[in-house]
Amino acid sequence: MERGRGAEGPDRGGGALRSRVIAIAVYLLLWAVGNVWISRYWAIIHRGELRVLVCVGKVEDIDSSQTVDQILKMRILTGPLRGMRVSVDNKFIGRPFVDRIISVGDKLFLQIPILSFDESGGIRFKKIYLGDYFRSGFILNMLGSFGFLLVLLGMKGVRAIFSLAISGAAMLFLLLPALIKGWPPVPISLAISVAVTLLTFFIVGGLNRKSLAGTLGTLGGLLSCLLLAYISSKALHFTGADVEFGFMKLGRILWRDQAMKGEMWDFRGILLAGMMIGALGAMMDVCMAISSAVDEVKKANPKIGVLQAIRSGLNVGRDVMGTVTNTLIFAYLGSDLTLFILPSILFPQAGKVYPFLRVINRESTAVEAVQGLAGTIGLVLAIPITAAIAGTLIGSKRKHREVVYE
Image (tube, rainbow, N blue to C red; front, side, top):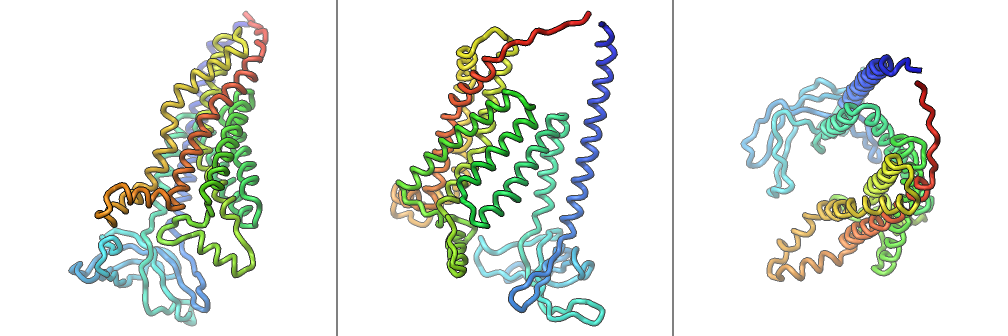
C-alpha cells in the first residue's frame, strides 16, 4: 500500500519541529525559574545562640585607595533587608593570594549577625561581614547553555538531559544519604552506578540488546577498576582520611565529628567508591560506542556471525582506546597541577626530583594517581568485555523477515 510515504514525510518533519519548539520553550522556562530562585536566596543560620542572616549584596560604589582596605557601598539584593544600602569593609592583610580586590558590580554573600528583632519584625544588626563571591548564577547559566545546546539537537538531546538529571538525582538523593546513614559505600555505589548506566542507556538508546550490552560492559569495567583500586589501597596503605578539601583536611574533620558521636566513617570504602564513580562517565562513553558500532555493523550486514561481530567491536575499541585512555589521566593531572608545581617553589634548593617524589608519596596525591591509573586500566579492560558481550548478544540476533507493502 503506497499511501504514504510522500504524505507521512512532511507530517513527521512538522511533528519533530513542534516537539523541538515545545522542548526548547519548556527548557527556557525552567532555566528562567531556576535563575529567579537562585537570585532570591537568603537564609538565617544558627551558630550556637547567635543567629546570622546570610544574603546576597551587589557592589555599587567603592571608596578606597586600595592600599589598606576597601569601603564597599553595597545594596542588599535578597532577604528581609532587600533594597537596603550598606557599607562593608574589605580589609587587606598583605597576602596577594588571600586579599580580594573587589570591583563595582560584583555580587557577594553577606553575613549579618542579628542582634535582635524590632517590634515590626525588622532586623537590628551592628556589623556586616563579607562572604564568598556569589557564583551560582554564572554556573547555572553555563549549565543552562549546555542543556540548551543539547535541546537544539532534538529529542536525543532532551533524552540526554533527562538521563543527566536522573544521574545527578541518584548521586545527590540516593548515594549521599545512604553514605551518611552508614551503608556500605562500595556495594551501594556499584548498585547505583549500574542502575544509572542502565537507565541512561535505555533512555538514550532504547530498550534493546545494544543498551544491555553497553550496561554489562560498563559493569565489567567498573568491577575491574574496583578490584585494582582495592588492591592498590591495601598495598599503598590508603586510609581515605587524607583528602584535600580547600584548606582543610576533610577526612580528619569528619573523623573528629564522628568520633565524638561514637561512630566511624568507612573512609577507605568511600575512597574506593569515589574511584569507581570517577571512571563511570568515560566508561559509559566507551562501552556505548562499541556496542552501537557492533549494532550498526549488524544492521549493515545481517549475515555476520558472533565472531565477526566481536572482531568489529574490538577494532572500534582499539581506535577509541588511543584517545580515551588520556581522558582520565589528564582529568586527574589537571586537577592536581598546582600541587605538582608548588613543591618546586617551596623547595628550590632540592631540585626537581626530591619535591616530585615527596608529592607523589603523599596519600592525597597517590590516591589521585591510583584513581587515574585504575580507571584507565578498567577502561581498557572494558573494551574487550563490551566487544565480547555486544558481539554475542547482537551478532546472534537473527534477521526478521521484512514485509514490504506495495
